[in-house]
Image (cartoon, one colour):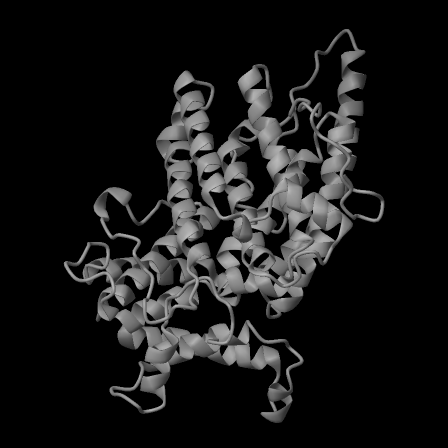
Length: 462
């Protein structure tokens, strides 16, 4: 766990190991130790010799450690303490537990409540370099980003209000000059913007008001500018730009195993995913009839395409180290955007989206699934999507033929096609999801600025 380059600095290596190895007391909490071991299993390969040496399988270790989470949590659930919060955040970000999504949701929510109970959300009058204060702030912001991104995945209300928090972001430990928190600090800022996107675009009030208003248009433009400003201030060494992609298309190993690829790549994926979320409600509209709506649709598609392209240059290990609920789920939900657009009436756009979807699935998602324990809930759904696409395409053709046949009859008008008011399918996808059922009347989206960026072999082309 401590030798891996993880995004969240939620557990201090020296502090924990000193307690674990008896150099100071008390020893670390059993719940935290179990959580660290559970998360560490996700960071090793299934074929690691240590499993054979211990006469256990990779899946058995995952299952045993995950099963220990609930009884250990029950023993510590009534007392708020830092170690319990640390453990809850690790468990909340552990993918196998997502087979019971309510359990992860409870872990994340309890982490928030315990952190607030200890006052971690409020600024403490202490030196910025104070060890105890640094620990409080690092734990708080780890809880904060977990809340933002898990609420996005589950489409749940945010548990933390920015108006109630005043903790500064002075998180650097002067005693560790080699520690680089650039990615984490920028991810916190991005998570704050994500919270605003969720509040303005996905709240119950926003959905009830609708999206074809001047107020929403102004909000979207302002949020997009904030996102653009955020991206521009991220150091070039910690993000991947379009120019970088063009260079990588020619020299795949140009940046080697640098932080630009290892952490800047997943951070870039998360940035473009937030753009997708900002513009996604407009993609589902049946009538894209204004320049603003066309621009939103194009921006969403371009961001989804960028995620697919840049993901091919990022090692699966880097995605997992960055965080399953962050980068991995961003790629997964982006693939659903491709799947949805593949039913578009514009054949060029639909074909391009289908190609992007298959590229995402085979080159990025499948390696991720192979790195996750068996039984992980995303497995079966990802495997079923190609069949859903094929069946949906067949149904669409049948429905069009049926509609054309009815239109030829003088006695009957065209039968209306079934639609659904649920515009949040990308977050609430059951395994039997029938994509075309949701938006059978979706009109053609503009493909004027869309380009064929993949050759037949699935490699990026510029």
